Length: 404
Image (cartoon, rainbow, N blue to C red):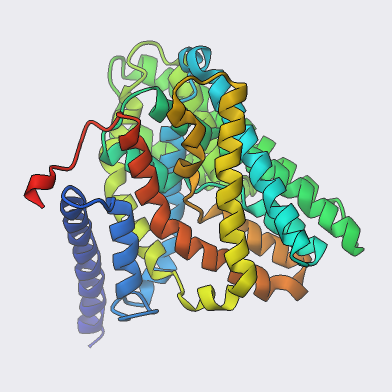
């Protein structure tokens, strides 16, 4: 009886993940013939088969979601690192720094000013102003990969997404401290210390693992990199980051940056190996992320949630205009790059949970606003990112509308 029970459990796991991978294949095929990117299709499908609608997913998938999230986002972080090479910074470093900082600051300023004028308590306005600048890297990277996008706009976009994590965490830690001071919270500096450690500890870990990985890629397997080598070090980096309580996305990104800059010849090999195996993980990640979306959060967020969505849009657009103008970008598409930075999940939810520890009295409101905004931005964000890359003329894969 135990044997049969064990076989049934294993069969359920195999059938579930086999079915999810096939759903990913279907989403990829549909995405080639519709304006919707496969990311949005996967998230929508996950939402439909998740507990909020049909409830088809077994309970164990939610237990595996944190592990899959760590693996998928660590791969994404590592891949983002290749966009921060010395050569690319020489040619587009000013747009990357200028637009990323301007988008971050304008999103935060617009959010705080708008919410404060609407009568939202100042500590809530500050917390949401610290969360709003964060961008979800996985949808942006996958849209670029799906389109096989190549060019300066795409490189700049991915460079901005790479540094966005560090800027955002530092700003969030600072504004959380200010909110604590204004509200009389006793734990004034713990948030700042945690934020600084999460950023600079992640950078240190990425450096410590990046140089050995660059050496391995250059000497132990000269001219090639094995999937076992790359995946092993990326997973070690992710696990060590979680153990040390630092950002695993940032540590993987720093490690990827070191490999891209210090590997002798064939710098692209490790990244090609990780790209070859990351799509199955991203299928599971996006489907389970979609299943975690709760439509009720949209209604619970209310007027503050609507204001959050509108103000974040204003901050993204105005920030990219200011940053691109300062950087002297002549390509008009750079001025609208903020629209390519709309995806908003993962990191913002983590920030919200951290803020809720310091302000438990506001936990329900904060979670409702962020989860509600996540539903909107995860559904429309990838589609807008895809449209912007195509408008920039850098998508190597275009939709043949005659076949629709």
